[in-house]
Figure 1 (tube, rainbow, N blue to C red):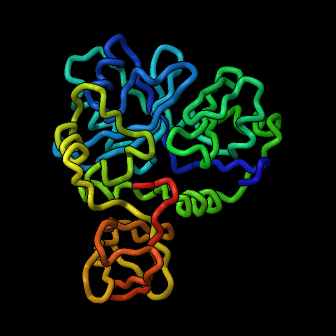
Figure 2 (cartoon, rainbow, N blue to C red):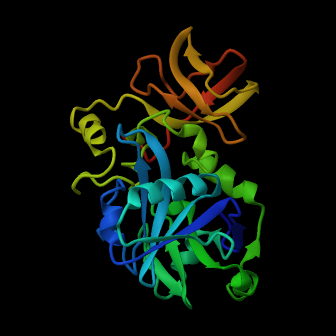
Length: 296
């Protein structure tokens, strides 16, 4: 990622939660520990089904007296509704600020050049009143600025950042092994822990109960994690969502995201899986890459 490049993430949405019960409200729902979120630290987390299946993922940033939520725009309406259902009588206000705020991503190198920055995933500083944070999933993804739309381009000019092709950012994220978009295709298709959330700093196994905690902890403690979400590279043919993946006619996975940045759930411990192999679906020849940051 070039130090002068900035990517306007127009596929992201911003929610804002505020009110005296907000911290406890989030703590009882999300897979990470809300106590990690402060003026100098943002965190990645997820909202799972009661069975521990993936529903939503997002980044939480402390802002004023409440919390900003940076999520994929296609998931924003569903997440807003889900949070509203859980709210009941809690003193929590949930706002969708997507028409007012925008998310911009730029390089890790640019972030650590700020005087007050620290080279730590999730580390958060302020640019005037607006939060800038090093991506809490993996710092190679760079930093994000959440800023009022009206101030965006003047601020980017002052920061000496040049608007760049968003597809470059998507491709980089895909190569790194982190899903850049189309998250709704994953809903209820796999467990949250199979999305590599432990390695992406999205699960805290020491916190108390949250939605989906029981199955998540059971998979972890009983060493039952045998499948993971991995990026797929198309060699030839056409991918289709839901297509089975084979090696020597033995099924080792399934395509879940079939867009320009495809991902599959893979039996990565199976003797028939090796990232050096060529795999196939009914209509495609593919490669599957295990991200370097997955060491287990």
